[in-house]
Image (cartoon, rainbow, N blue to C red; front, side, top):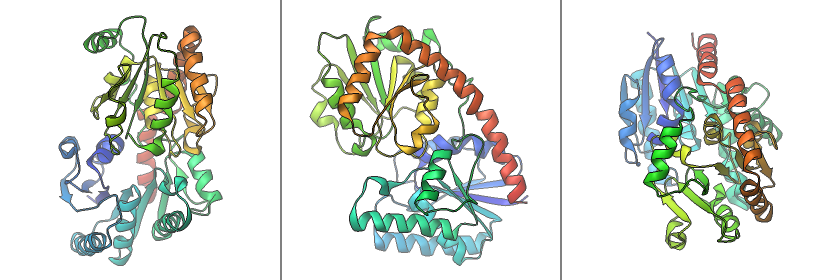
Length: 371
């Protein structure tokens, strides 16, 4: 049985995006995983159906010494283990894996682009990060992106060429429609837990709490809503920039840590929000749509695949806080219409992004390219 090694920087990335693909491919190949176990949520990799997990210190931020040492170790590891193919996800993992795979002579090197850090950067930093993405693409023998709009964006910016592919209609792993299924009992139980009454309209963001994900814009837009409006805002995820300290005193805003069961926690809300400045695809959006939640999102390139404006949600120009506020107020005043959008969203996901369909594409891709 041929050996495949996946390389990611975070256990959360492996669990969120690769659980389904790994389970599917493990029936055809021996699957191994390289991941930085010094990160949060290292227990998540225990649930993955892999032959063995290897710890390498792949860190998100640039650290020249640590990055070079990690690369040297990866090259030695690849030479000793002779994998038939390697597959990386996320920028730093991609750079180390594709460079290490090229130097050690691995013939099949696959990278999946999931988002571009440089989109919100300027000057030398932007140019450097763009160069890294170009280098990853050049060193890869096969390139995937997790959405059509991201693919078009990367081609336009000359990061990848027309040989790059999208699996199915997009997203890395799709959504389990059985797992992400609206359940009134779950909703009522969780809303009772957080003392949310029946008439309160809850907005929710779920993901890494960072400025470039538009979280500060969402908070500002939400706080412009008059207090007599019966609303709440839930912000769910790892607070990477310590945003909570400035806003935790607001009674209508609730911060929650990363949740391993998004299929449950999202059910609390009435509208799901992703006002991101950069996004490769927006898995959380189609998960929320699966749960019949209407969406309010920015129009950044990666989200164009996940939301149909005025049908499954409401879209606004990136960074337009006033328009975001308008959409929040519209949601409160047009609850019936928003619920219709939520039902449309479920239909849209069923048609385009079901886990079953995407995993068939994973198997087809690997059977065509890794055999």
